[in-house]
Length: 179
Image: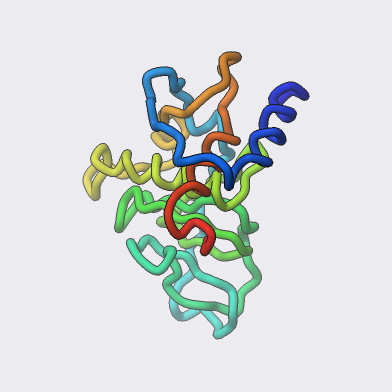
């Protein structure tokens, strides 16, 4: 993001509470491959027999509870401020992970290549979940497919993703102050 776009983003941040929910007119949005926006890493296998009790979230390929299957005592293998996406089990379920965690080998972790916060992450989570219909148990969303998968994003006239719009949109929704 260049200085002009950063300035546009900073100016937009000042007006979040003053504007109504922005329109979702996607006709001027642009397609991006996930690998252009995120570094995608695979989770790691951890058997029940090897788990120890603790307070580190263990993210499994489930469709609820933010993906938290249980808490373990192992050191986290992934940082917070990332997005988890199931490629097995509940395929294409996506969740924002604010804190460090361990992800099972049925989960891919998206590390942003841009400055992301929880609001921008939730915008991405919604878009990623919309891709669910393309994948299932028989057609898993493995890392190779995920890297080349595309999502459509709001952009500036220059074609750079408009992360400020994404944040403003989520903040404008009812109950967003509780995020």
